Length: 329
Ligand code: TXA
Ligand code: MG
Image 1 (tube, rainbow, N blue to C red):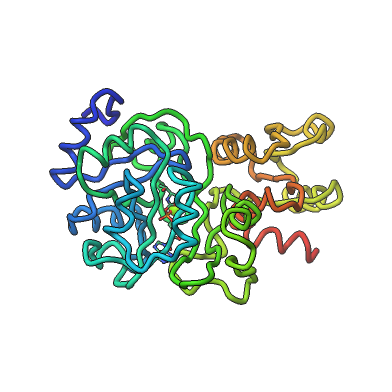
Image 2: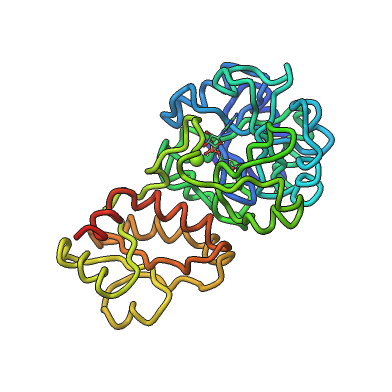
């Protein structure tokens, strides 16, 4: 069976979706595992393929800004400003859903997460299908998201076809904003759109400060997520790195910024000091590290600056549990 769908064969991909198949699709953030939102059975299959709990809601993907008003209701003015500025792009809005969105997509919630992805193939696909696509990231539940075709194949083998759209440009999942309140919003999941960029678009007074105590009560926001199979640690300095080595004296795969890589004599990857390039590389690097001969992965902590927020969030989740071990040594 051919599992890779050629980019100039969009009409074949559309037919697969019409028949109720689940397809892996490219977006600018990560590859998604997509089905037509109107087909309950097809959407259920996404959950089954991913091993994802059924109450864990999905993002729907539209091809036009104008369609926002078909699938969401009571859209606050600040949300329109965000859409104008950032769509198509890595921004998801949570809004009250219209009756066109079935409960099988939202896990029985009255809200829907919605975005317009910035990838020409997927926009064409949605346009030709005439309906939005429900799509979580195309990885097994809790694991590292795929940013290129062969990552999807690593996750699902021949279980799903992949529309080949090249490597993802952004590299980590979209920023999710709760926009259900008429006068203020909140970041539910950080991404490459930083709080500063959001405030500059809508005004500071519209964005509530995030603190961990107000973490959203939605399935899917787990402390551990995006996790490699191997033990994975974050370290801030050579001392912390040495602590890791005391626990795991065997080979270590290093993702680091500096000359540490050569100095410490480990295999690994020199990571870019620009957050946009770093995000694009991150999941690929984690997958390479996971399949290397090393028994453990050590990641140098990025600078504590807002533009690194989305990346630090993913690193903390990928290393959850282990970073505490190091700090409390
Ligand atoms: O970049 C992305 O967002 C990628 C691409 C494929 O679009 N998608 C993605 O989907 O990361 P997923 O399912 O892996 O993560 C979606 C997150 C989940 O944590 C889910 O709980 C949250 O969105 N979510 C979905 N619907 C929601 C809702 N109604 N209210 C609050 N959170 C919601
Ligand atoms: Mg995901």
